[in-house]
Image (cartoon, rainbow, N blue to C red):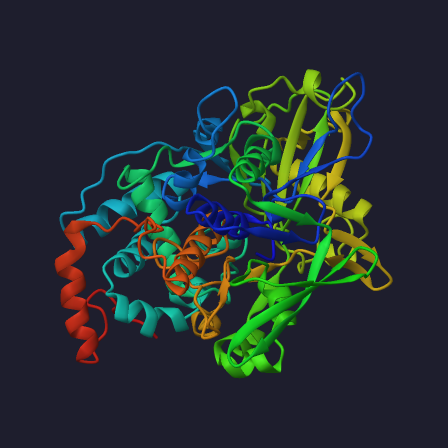
Length: 547
């Protein structure tokens, strides 16, 4: 298995449980990929651990099913499982600048009638108008579009909505600025989606999953959860320990640079250590569990000829989304939940995560002066900021830290006074994947950018190469959602493991399970009717007035 991120560890877990001898090769010195924790070197004193950073804060949503199943199967030394280390997030706030009011929303299941499309449109429109304070006609317009997606057949989803950008689908250009930011700013909540280019199918799929989650339908726990501590300490480290106990071997600090393909099969791999020394790897089955931008570097002419779907991956696009943590001397007077900074040009989402952690911060990490970790995701690296007037990628690391702080300050507080006083700030830590070069910043861990028609460019976990399998978040996933996430990486890993079992003829081994997303039975008739309309070349019954 090349890659020790969520997909690679999932493959290792599923196969090791079924008696396979698994070796995971990882270019870094630690496991976890984008989910791993990043520690500020030499920041811990007096027996405390170094200050914990993250590539971005983790969210385990209620509509996730594959990942929670894995978490339940990772035991802890004192009993219980890693699943028990999740803690619910009960509030989300849409923070605004200027005199526009903030919008705090509780994250808890409610009730909503799904008995008929017209009633649902009216009810959902009313909730949007009241909750997000949108003009009633805009709220009703979006509600109709949402219900259209919820009741579309699969053929229409992949044949029509996959090829239409979300921004165009919701007709954002015709709407108010608030509508555009609150309903068209999907990159703020789903970091690898950009409304002007993101597929309506994928955005609609995510919206539908969140919608059912908030109804309490088909959820595996609360709608929003985070780990009760740094991700590596709460999840990755126990996972690696469990895999080692199952016999999995790890080869850290080694990069696979070549797959040798003959007669439609991989016969060996070549890896190099940090000194550049080559090493041949022989195996029966090979799994590429690295991001798409790194996987395509392995696809030589022989592999591309054996499976043209691998060559199609060259058309996939990528984007930047990275985390920065601010370490505070005093707890910030903000909610203990996710805050969407609606008007931030860099599309920031923050969470005062240590408010939800189980260990007292000042006694566990750092130098004893830090009492809180404020974690922020930066989703837009292309738009000029408010402090320096430059996109994030054209700033220095220091300027990124100052700019993000300024954008948050502008959202948190009123009457010209921010709750983020500069005296709070002890230090900050920007994702180590962001480095400075002569031409600006560089990104070592880009995200797959969902875009219209990109489904056609994505391969399945089982390739046409007889013993090569794929396990990463760019792989086609079918059970629930398919945007870049820990859930999709986990599902891809399960599908790759199932492919290995089939190739190995391991018919007596337990099946590798993947979980289906929730489907409302009330919509079954509407979907059947839409399938008939699709076959006849007719639009969805609610798709009226589109220009």
